[in-house]
Length: 343
Image (tube, rainbow, N blue to C red; front, side, top):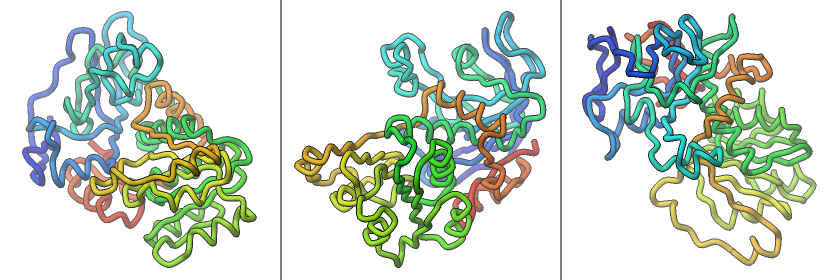
């Protein structure tokens, strides 16, 4: 079969490799679509110290079941969206529903081969809670966005985004737009989105009430204007370019929440914070890493049911042979998501 094989940082080629075999208790998929995440871009560019080569990347996966174990919830010919986490199911985080924090977590497209290949094997652990059966007629390419949407659901659950909130999203890439769409569905009163790139600001106008040019406009003044001087209730960091600091604290209303959704750059990990302000104004700083399988399931249902229109976020579609073009499109950050959907 054909697969895009990463041999070392910067070296990825489409080549012929042996067909996978379904592991005992696992399944075999025909991949239908797999979209490109910012993590894939970083791994291709600079590698990762924990990554073993060769590796097939891709963790935003939709496929058709070719082989399934007996008595499983999935059957042959089912189209499924895959939660990429492989969790033990028995540690304390798993038992409490936080399987994204599993102590023995591994990830498809990182620790094991992922979706940039014609067929892929799924381990036994994925069968019990990592697969979401899509209804007949569901768009496979759109369903690849269930995993990033699930990450947004996890973050907004933790930040308690709710009706009548003023929400500020910093970063207008695919996940920033997903955050805006999700906050709208949750009943947010007003959504402000800050982004540097003009092409992305134009697209963001479909999802936010006010789109801010992060390169030239004063965010403090705009927040004060849009909230009547009250401040925002939630700040969602959807880019690693922004640091959590006292400037952000001053944008919050009493009881406001900051969610560190995107991982910060190394130089932004450690910053002094005004703890007095956090204390006296009931402020909250919360982190959000990946998504539990339950959030991924909710996201798959939202997309496949049409409750959330994500079709316009797929701005580059290509066959596996053109995966380098798809990665270039994603790395250019001119538009939104690239997806490989012709295998």
